[in-house]
Image (spheres, rainbow, N blue to C red):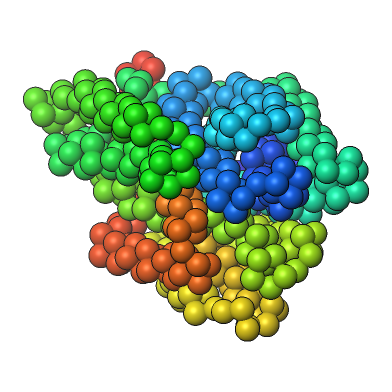
Length: 489
């Protein structure tokens, strides 16, 4: 394979795979994140309160937390081809059901289930990791993530237009239905057009399923601790729906959810122990080890970068309408600029990572994220709209480049567990979205932006002092027991 990645060379099979896969991701985001730009239409048509609308936005990203963990495990075991098809088809039908729901309770339940389609992102990380070498993986993953993320911009530019011009008050239902049918059809097409690996390559699978493999006692403890934020995010959602906040569920149901999450955590701990207890008796050979702290830091980094993206793209149209009294379609188009920059920024983050290194790139982008959102933290309604949009774009460029930089490193940690590592990082992105959107529902918009800036600054400290650059090679075992070395530099 040549050093230069030519994305227009459609004769090369890996380039075909890249294009088929980023568009699969694109379709998941059209269906999943189309809720944000359509929310002003849904809110008006169904006469929802501000809090009801904000809760739907939170529910939209909540299911994706466990879904990305589970899908990460399944894609490592069954391969990305069947997984992407399943997510697009099943997710499309759930989205159609949401589009034609009548009661708020039905909307809430189906929007929670719709978060399942957001797990598709994890599938493509493994697919692209199989088809591109380490020297090109940053750019390839960036194109996959950036152009796929553009689906939220595509939704912002098309779905409000359909909603405003067809079907009257029911227009939002038609818009989501059209997008969902397109996703289902593309999912079927994807199954027949791709393969999991290049011909003759081995698809490495984890030795055990149900939990990630770690390689030291300290990493085992850290892995157990890193599962806590995933469940805390779901507990936060339950609290938001409880009598203390929205009153959508009874207090007894709230306590039952808390208890269930605690039991789930204990089961996770038991499973992690079963998969990894042997390392305390027989140390893992040095050449087969990896440092789980790399995974943990990437998780926190993606919590900020992608969590910010999901939260901001979900609330931006409502922010423009409520603070600056902009017409709904205009607000949706202005909000669409934010995800639009994914087209360049996320591949740019991956490309720069290939060029100057993973750690340095993350340090630069997190400095930019911190600066951008801290400035937005001082915004008020007297600011000109063009200035607010410009600062939002500045902050968005760095956050999206940061997502590209995170996933430029994810496939280089441990090949056979790329899906699980990508799934965990992706889940933390949704933890960030739940956390940021919950904060958004509790405070004014300027305080929401400032909170993001503060969290970004804390993660920047972790990157500076604890993240290590991938180097050398990683070892993977072939089915016949021989060891294959894979370059990561």
